[in-house]
Amino acid sequence: MPEGAHSRHRRNVPMGHDVKARLWILYVVGALATVGGYYASGQTVWIFHLIGLSAAVGIIAGVAIHKPEHKLPWILFALTLVAVFFVGEVAGTTASSCRSASAFNLV
Image (cartoon, rainbow, N blue to C red; front, side, top):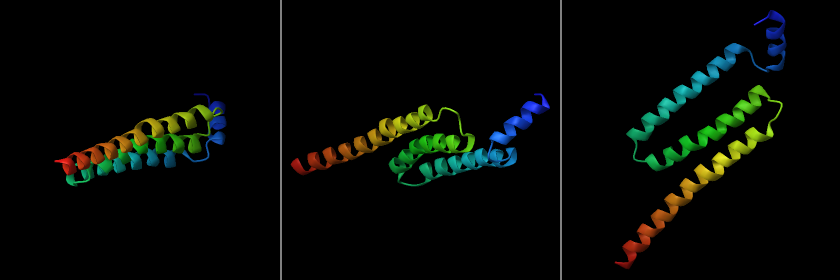
């Protein structure tokens, strides 16, 4: 990459390359710890929901760090992830818990 293009790119990035490199490593370490917690604890359902929510949080963090010219598609994508995955999974888990409780009470 020509030096002029590289220096132009760095002016648009609010953080240095080293800090961004550490952020993705932090995300990977956090994800591995979460997966370990998923298998080690009895709360697998809620940890599964948090893993799904982390994708939307990652997109919003990426928008904040990289400041793309067109932010709206990324924000809509993150909101869609929350609406479809996170809310759907929580509602499905809650509904199945209620059905189990209702079925148990009827017997």
